[in-house]
Image 1 (cartoon, rainbow, N blue to C red):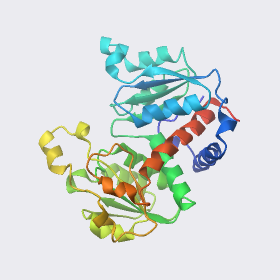
Image 2 (tube, rainbow, N blue to C red; image 1 turned 30 degrees about the vertical axis):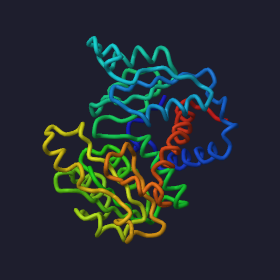
Image 3 (cartoon, helix red, strand yellow; image 1 turned 180 degrees about the vertical axis):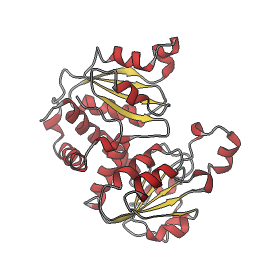
Length: 305
């Protein structure tokens, strides 16, 4: 039995296989509509979510399986004082696989130690979000034709952004990736990511506070929101929340084939006028999330079409 807690739980070869499987699901959806018949997925979301939870549910239903679960801690027995590990151990008696989101870093890992079915980390605090990373990699692959030899800029909240941390960890294992980190001083990429992932592997990166200066160099731009829920001080959030706003004017110096990504939800960091730009691929990114999660569920359950 395998779990997916961190994207590095998967080898590069396994990631590439998941991408190829997702591509086949996109091309031949009818082939997969009954693959998970009589299988059940539990979505245990102790933290609010729209895209990730519904994406998992849509993925399982599209495979012919069924779904049960909850969308907030208040509607689970943790509100009565039950531990997360006891909740997971109980739910694993009912289902074949669990997707779990929790505000505390490490909670899905702790849960995996007590679960009798595979656990998928659907986001734990500011730490990791491996299925969003798989979504991002699938989108990059579909837009560029490969996952190598490009410059990617991460912009916004790089300190608390679990999607950013996961994607940097994943991309560091591919060849020819150049990293630009665009953020205010207070929201810089954590030192442990730079030291343990980049410096230790001899990978170069640059840090800047200017999106305008970085823009002409980028092949992929990964925008993020400043996350109010991660701040202890509301005054700091208010001061930093609109540091970067991507609008059509800022894209004038960008490459014609730039790929603009965002894990969503957005607040103000991408102007709605950008949505009509063909380089904006964040809603396609959302769509891709369903297919890569279908491929992942199949892999962890040992299913094939």
